[in-house]
Length: 133
Image (cartoon, rainbow, N blue to C red; front, side, top):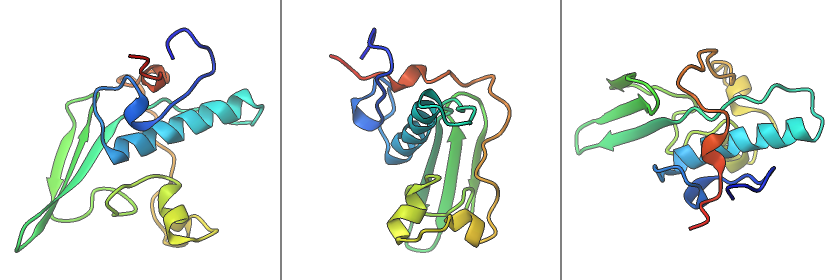
């Protein structure tokens, strides 16, 4: 809620204009990091940097689509452009949905879960406000 300190949200209830499962997962990651830092965890919370990801499926092939919402960076490929290559990619979601206690990225030799250091197009959790309308 605007004006209510330390209130966080993710997904459809936020004021962010794009409503998509992968975006909601990214919002939840950013909110969880901020909450952990406020609770005293020794972490530097990273900003919410929205990245749209999708798969275009046809009868003959699949294409992976990726676009950084805050930049002019977009890609289309015949191979996965994110890890894990699931319908909704989230840092903790894949591990949770598989019922594993280990990080799926670590166990599969995937790239690091840390996001890039370029934050020029990202806001500091500004889009994690509850939509009070």
